[in-house]
Length: 87
Image 1 (cartoon, rainbow, N blue to C red):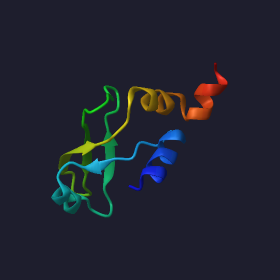
Image 2 (image 1 turned 60 degrees about the vertical axis):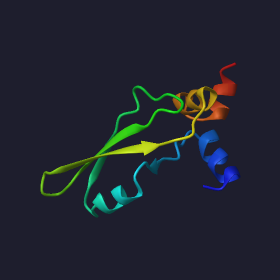
Image 3 (image 1 turned 90 degrees about the vertical axis):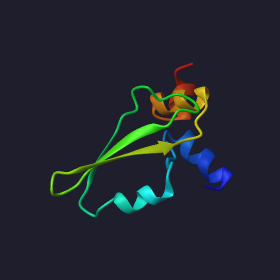
Protein backbone atom coordinates (compact mmCIF):
# COMPACT_ATOMS: atom_id res chain seq x y z
CA UNK A 1 0.00 0.00 0.00
CA UNK A 2 1.11 3.55 -0.59
CA UNK A 3 1.62 5.22 2.80
CA UNK A 4 -1.09 7.87 2.26
CA UNK A 5 -3.59 5.33 0.91
CA UNK A 6 -2.95 2.98 3.82
CA UNK A 7 -3.44 5.78 6.35
CA UNK A 8 -6.67 6.88 4.67
CA UNK A 9 -8.03 3.33 4.88
CA UNK A 10 -7.17 3.16 8.57
CA UNK A 11 -8.85 6.51 9.27
CA UNK A 12 -12.02 5.16 7.65
CA UNK A 13 -11.98 2.11 9.95
CA UNK A 14 -10.64 -0.33 7.35
CA UNK A 15 -7.78 -2.68 8.25
CA UNK A 16 -5.33 -3.07 5.35
CA UNK A 17 -4.31 -6.73 5.49
CA UNK A 18 -1.64 -8.54 3.51
CA UNK A 19 -0.83 -12.23 3.29
CA UNK A 20 2.06 -13.21 5.56
CA UNK A 21 3.06 -15.78 2.93
CA UNK A 22 2.41 -14.37 -0.56
CA UNK A 23 1.80 -17.92 -1.87
CA UNK A 24 -1.29 -18.16 0.38
CA UNK A 25 -3.06 -15.85 -2.08
CA UNK A 26 -3.35 -18.86 -4.39
CA UNK A 27 -5.44 -20.69 -1.76
CA UNK A 28 -8.32 -18.24 -2.23
CA UNK A 29 -11.10 -19.49 -4.51
CA UNK A 30 -13.85 -17.51 -6.22
CA UNK A 31 -16.75 -18.79 -4.12
CA UNK A 32 -14.98 -18.77 -0.73
CA UNK A 33 -16.41 -17.26 2.39
CA UNK A 34 -13.87 -15.70 4.71
CA UNK A 35 -13.77 -15.36 8.47
CA UNK A 36 -11.20 -13.14 10.17
CA UNK A 37 -10.83 -13.21 13.96
CA UNK A 38 -10.22 -9.64 15.11
CA UNK A 39 -11.05 -10.19 18.79
CA UNK A 40 -7.38 -10.09 19.76
CA UNK A 41 -6.28 -7.44 17.24
CA UNK A 42 -3.03 -5.97 18.54
CA UNK A 43 -0.08 -4.07 17.08
CA UNK A 44 2.55 -6.23 15.38
CA UNK A 45 0.43 -9.39 15.80
CA UNK A 46 -0.85 -11.25 12.72
CA UNK A 47 -4.51 -12.18 12.42
CA UNK A 48 -5.84 -15.51 11.20
CA UNK A 49 -8.23 -15.80 8.28
CA UNK A 50 -10.14 -18.94 7.43
CA UNK A 51 -11.26 -19.38 3.83
CA UNK A 52 -14.12 -21.87 3.58
CA UNK A 53 -14.26 -23.31 0.09
CA UNK A 54 -17.42 -24.38 -1.74
CA UNK A 55 -16.53 -28.06 -1.18
CA UNK A 56 -16.48 -27.50 2.60
CA UNK A 57 -12.71 -27.62 3.03
CA UNK A 58 -10.88 -24.78 4.76
CA UNK A 59 -7.60 -22.97 4.32
CA UNK A 60 -6.18 -21.08 7.29
CA UNK A 61 -3.72 -18.28 6.63
CA UNK A 62 -2.03 -15.55 8.61
CA UNK A 63 -2.45 -11.94 7.60
CA UNK A 64 -0.24 -9.00 8.55
CA UNK A 65 -1.28 -5.46 9.38
CA UNK A 66 0.54 -2.32 10.46
CA UNK A 67 -2.09 -0.92 12.83
CA UNK A 68 -0.93 0.99 15.91
CA UNK A 69 -2.88 1.01 19.18
CA UNK A 70 -4.44 4.38 18.22
CA UNK A 71 -5.41 3.08 14.77
CA UNK A 72 -6.98 0.00 16.33
CA UNK A 73 -9.06 2.43 18.37
CA UNK A 74 -10.19 4.06 15.10
CA UNK A 75 -11.20 0.64 13.80
CA UNK A 76 -13.14 -0.25 16.95
CA UNK A 77 -14.98 3.10 16.78
CA UNK A 78 -15.79 2.63 13.09
CA UNK A 79 -13.46 5.42 11.96
CA UNK A 80 -11.16 8.12 13.30
CA UNK A 81 -13.96 10.66 12.88
CA UNK A 82 -16.35 8.55 14.97
CA UNK A 83 -13.75 8.36 17.73
CA UNK A 84 -13.14 12.11 17.66
CA UNK A 85 -16.86 12.87 17.78
CA UNK A 86 -17.12 10.89 21.04
CA UNK A 87 -14.49 13.04 22.77
